[in-house]
Image 1 (cartoon, rainbow, N blue to C red):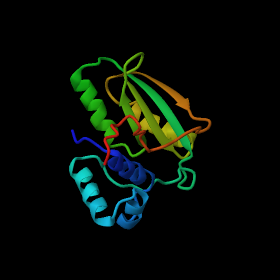
Image 2 (cartoon, rainbow, N blue to C red; image 1 turned 120 degrees about the vertical axis):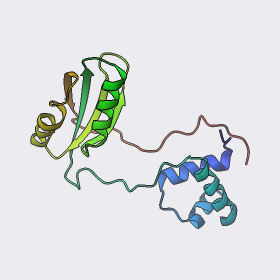
Image 3 (cartoon, helix red, strand yellow; image 1 turned 90 degrees about the vertical axis):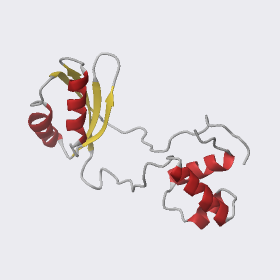
Length: 161
């Protein structure tokens, strides 16, 4: 694993907050000249620290104000059933997140939909007809208290740069 120093960490934090920063702006934020800053970003990219760059949309503005959390329990938690479920769910555009869980259920899914009718349609046409599902429990989000995409990096080594 690539050992990160303070400057690498600052670069990662700055780019998580705003991936649209120019190299000049980034260099200024992390107190480097542009050339070494660009070189460090390239190394971080090559080492796989970045999964991509996105623009985060406001769900309200694009007509997807309803977040639904779904707990799915499979009939049998065997490899082929897990793989089949995961491969199917990956193709559904409404599914924003999907996690294999420990505990009382197998998967936790977050779905973004415009309204309750759209969720009912998702349930009726996509989730319920799937083979191998034992139970589905749904919870609707009343209010988003916190949402962020920036990972906390304060646990990373602080080797001097």
